[in-house]
Length: 281
Image (cartoon, rainbow, N blue to C red):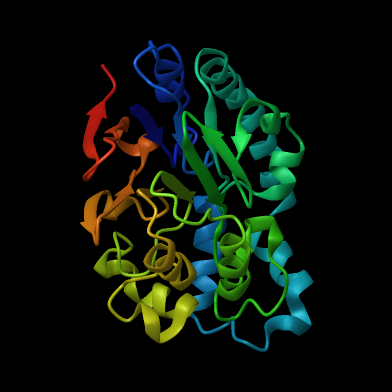
């Protein structure tokens, strides 16, 4: 069985248009690992505050102010219009081949809610689909930052224990044909940020990020316990690649928006998956 996967599109309309025009007849389905939009402007505002020591665990008293400072309303409205333009390409892909996926932390819940994006792909978040004898399971977003003592569902930030608990209910027993799709990577597997981002990583994730690893502890444990055939994700662009650990194939799709690359995955009944990173023609 052959499938195609991509993620982190960074609003690259030209690349999405070319991808949606492809012939998908060789693929059983397409997987999307999240982050349609580019919210770098929001990230820079928050990064500036974190590095300046202006965000701490005691921020709950000024959450409303913090939101207004790091998520300007005028930019939210502009991004909603941008997303509505990009929806057409997901619709076109879904008309050709089944499209499954999850939203990423850049897929701001308010922005997505202003569009009809949800109609054009099968959202795997906390759901289980069956396709050609394979079980597809997913989880959206990223782990909460250490100072996020509040509900940050707009960025789909999750608590590790809740993610683990939710996923354990979905995994079928004794099923060797399970594919896990998440936006964030599992901890210490294709999840390392660049050296220049380490200080910010520690400011948002604490000691666990001292070596730049910011993946999900819940996802790492889930894969150890349930051993899916494949775990595919994105989020950390610079850690794009493939690793095989204990018979599980892990794939970080990287950034489709930056490099115009998607992943072609051939899944055999026995043994590791064959993985090829391909550029748009």
